[in-house]
Length: 88
Image 1 (tube, rainbow, N blue to C red):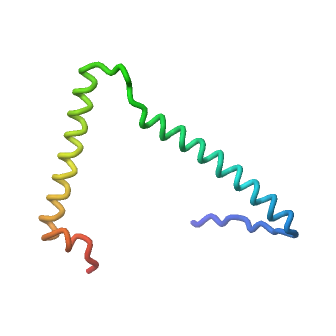
Image 2 (cartoon, one colour):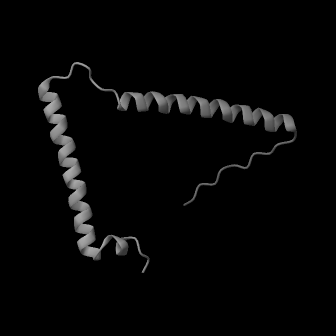
Image 3 (spheres, rainbow, N blue to C red):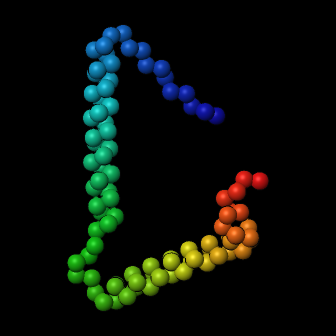
């Protein structure tokens, strides 16, 4: 079931400007939250131990290998990359 949003009625230009200001504040708050989240995700540990670095390198290597194997299986199944994205 699709939820319908209520239709907002604007009676004057002041109402429109007020809503525009509210949306701008909301966008700024969301942008700030996304920026902080992105910084937290990409935070690198300065004093990571050698074990952590090796573990991270192995993890990234396995992810890359998994991606290559997935692409290889898809290309073999669809007989080429061009056929993979072709509409039938």
